[in-house]
Image 1 (cartoon, rainbow, N blue to C red):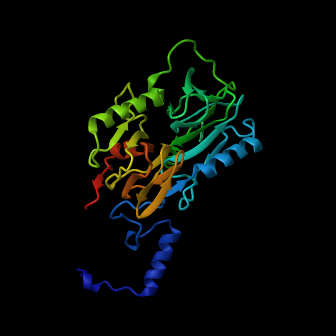
Image 2: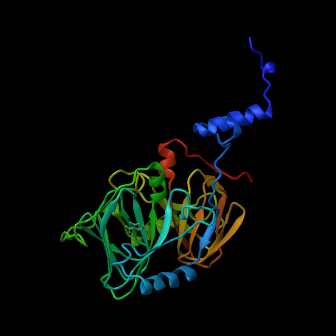
Image 3: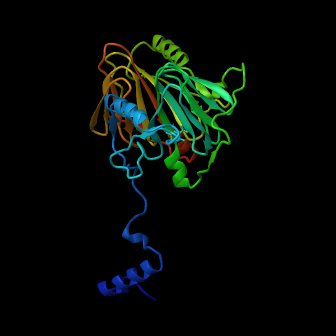
Amino acid sequence: MLKLSDIKSSEEELREYYEQLRSQHVSPLWLGGGISLEPKSKAIPYVWHWRDLRPQAMRAAQLVGTEQAERRVLRLTNPELPGASASNTLVANIQIVMPGEIARAHRHTAAALRLIIEGKGGYTVVNGHRIPMHPGDLVLTPNWTWHDHANDTDAPMIWLDGLDTPLVRMLEGGFYEEYDMETQAVGEGADPPPQWHYPMSQARAALERLAAERGGSPANPIVLDYTNPLTGGPTMPTIACQIQLLRPGEHTLAHRRVCCANHHVIEGSGYSLVGGRRLDWEEKDVFTVPTWTFHEHVNTGDRPALLFSFTDAPVMKALELYREEAKAR
Ligand code: GTQ
């Protein structure tokens, strides 16, 4: 019988063997590339400032029409991600539609959300329903819903797009289809379906109610999940949305979760400590928190700060990969 101690191979033998394996498209696991001890994102914590983004969005509107650009969108690209997305599985993009413009109708299996940043109220048509878009509103166009955007006001409409395109690409599950007309016909009268429209006025009222009940303690953050009223679950199967109110001076406890998160500052100013980096933010900035990275938020202003965020937590939970933990103090 062959004993372990009898196994002796020369460097030359090994080199030859590995070379053969390579040519046969086979790889020995013992050389690495196996299982990690814990999640470690390639993405880094990063903030994009509105003072930089807004002028570039306006410039895009001067340079490129919505006939040329099916979607006039600027992608926020994490400095360490080659795939040009803000975070590992989710993009965070800025889209601009100028007065009188439309973004023509299409659908895709990637799910999308819009958090309205600026404008006087254009609209998105989702499967024939007209959904209004006011600053702070959350508008959803889930997997395979037809959607076109329009601006019938006299001011630019700018919003944050969140999509799961990197995830769908990785899963190789992407389909896309153009509508046979530029825009969808809109049904009359009916209220927008509530599972696609989460008005800012409701979110604000709910947060203020919660803040009044809770008073002030760091262990009791004022944070709400947006829930789909038809299912009671997260907004979409792949993307969860939250809104958090930070009281003036509030400094949240550091914690980390297995999910990537993109944040948008609806209002207020402060900073977040994310994996040892300090991200200073002001109104309308966007910042990204990679998976399994400790983070804490600080409101340095003299009024409440409102943070919107979207994450891939529903995916992690469905696959039983989700964990969270507070930082030991
Ligand atoms: O509005 O349909 O940011 O299809 C990227 C792809 C937005 C959209 C994006 C899209 C859209």
